[in-house]
Length: 59
Image (cartoon, rainbow, N blue to C red; front, side, top):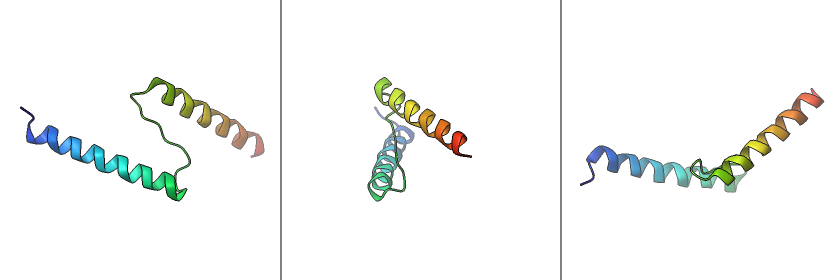
């Protein structure tokens, strides 16, 4: 049996996923990752590192 708190958590996660997707489509976010997928975590980590290095080189 799923408790009300767990069900509310699932609903919140689903709404957050939709909002993140919409922000990506609008260009407000430039990258995102599913933190349960090791490949996506690695990809967003590389993306962040490259951006950090470029930013610090320019500034």
